[in-house]
Amino acid sequence: MPVELSKAHVNRCGRLLRDFDPNAFDEGEIYAAISTVDWWRARHAKPLARVNAGLRHYVKKAGASEQSVTQRLKRFETIVDKLERFPGMQLTRMEDIGGVRAILDSQRQVDAVAEALLRQPKWTIRRVRNYVDGRRPGPKADGYRAVHVVVERDGCFVEIQLRTPWQDAWAQSVEQDTRRLRSRLKFGDGPNDLRQYYLLIAEFFAIRERLEAPSEEFMNDLANLFARTRQYFPTAEEEQSR
Amino acid sequence: MSPANVQHFLVIYDIAAGEAIVEHFGEAYDEALAAYEAAERANRDDTNVEVVLLGSDSRETLERTHSSYFRLMDKHIDQIVAKELEELGLR
Image (cartoon, rainbow over all chains, first blue to last red; front, side, top):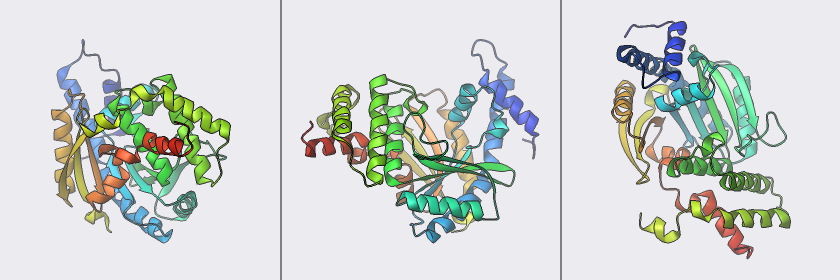
């Protein structure tokens, strides 16, 4: 593998994998494209570790535990999946090939870390997405809540995800159920009643985090959706026998 | 913690079993990356297996930040809601 490949070449390989047709492909070309995507991802490895270490400094400064930060290099499959979901996206513009996640104690702590990141001099801030009520762009349509800060380091983008424990519990559960039910819940797809249930749970947690009390009507809606979605969840006995 | 001290873990998750095998590479980043690529290639056609490379200070931390690869049990949001509804007499 050459030491450095051009971004144009990396993008071309991304398009090749995005448009992959199992009935008509050149095996050599596909394997070369896979190697190129692996190379582009591996190029994020060092910047990612630097952001991981740097973020820990700001997490600690905000009064949170450093033992709440983990980096991950995006899975090959989800890189290609994202290119398919966003056909106009160039691979070299994908912002979350390198990702670092921190679980903080509260929204206040999340905001303190985000503020510190905006002020630090080492990384260029590319984007801030406040998936939080009352801010821009606000929670995602499926209920996902967090603050994402995309930074640029050594020519690579790294997405920093800052979540409260409640926001994280929601996201982890949806992620696990996306796999368990083999649906695309995480991408806003899947059974309608289950998506409604998750949406309401996300709102329920957000209300709790604001130390407010949900209305009686809200809780009745939640109870109704809870009852309607039992077929998607294992019973306690089924869970025990796994 | 310096970037060189990040501990690397290859997680190979069996979706049907709901179980993760975690391989610890210590600070050997290049070795972990090579293993990541090899594991992905070996499991490319297996829709029951998910492979991911994570880096943190310890396995305990990644179990916290990436708990969906581990047993959520009573931390699953459905369980949390079930308890809340139970307390309110709504189920």
